[in-house]
Image 1 (cartoon, rainbow, N blue to C red):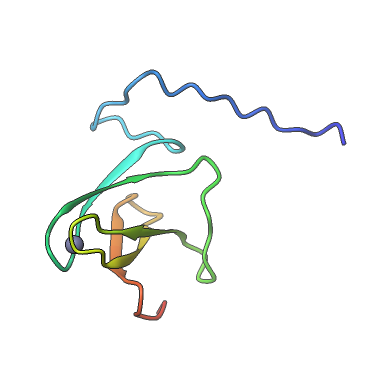
Image 2: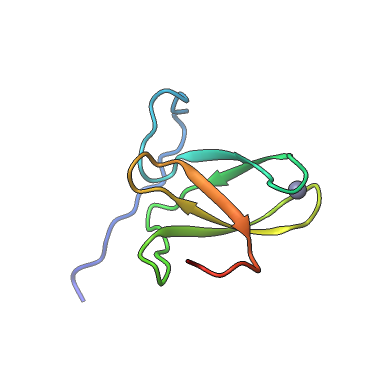
Length: 88
Ligand SMILES: [Zn+2]
């Protein structure tokens, strides 16, 4: 196999909140249950769920609610819902 992808780890430069960058960037969202601020680190190889969205599992550090976060492909807003709800 000669097709190894060279994934570099160059995260030393902080990206400003006004300059979102796909891959390795952070998204912020409030916990829908307790309102705590959660930080999601986006992956360079984002997981795609069965609905075709970039989705992540988060756990609120404050109330331990497990959340499913989906990144809106149109404006990259992070939408979270409690994990027990089905993907619609
Ligand atoms: Zn919470």
